[in-house]
Image (tube, rainbow, N blue to C red; front, side, top):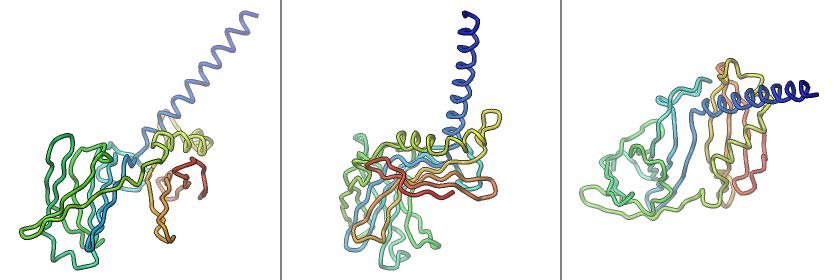
Length: 223
């Protein structure tokens, strides 16, 4: 009887170790993980501030490389942004004033800046946009307030994709990259947000789910 119990304990330990390896492999394969999202607007500009952990350079190629934290500010405008390409920003974070200038992304038609390694931009309340003649203070709203956490999203994804994780984990390495983003559905009268999780293969095919940020329910699947 003692031998049976001992064998059962060993088997359980091996199973748990295997599951733990697969879970670790999944998390180590995250190439983009969004941490926070703030939005603000004026008559002329729409500002989005997103903090994330992202591989550099980011490529949706099914291979997760080393990541770093970033805080990206994106400015959109109904006017020609090339006319305001000398726009700068400043905001206070952790009792420190952070300033910088924007770059023009001609392809996307936006101004953007990476402020560095700020991981918790959700604490920002406002941002100032300015140039040589004008200064505008823009209030920011945390659109992820009330959402389930990114860690909860990861747990939901692990459960949803458990079979795929097991089948595609080889020698402790998950053979896909994982993308976690908080996205907006702009097609509705009132903007709604969702968590989007994609598992990207090396052949650029992917599995994906949409998760309700309030209930954690998986509301759409692509397989």
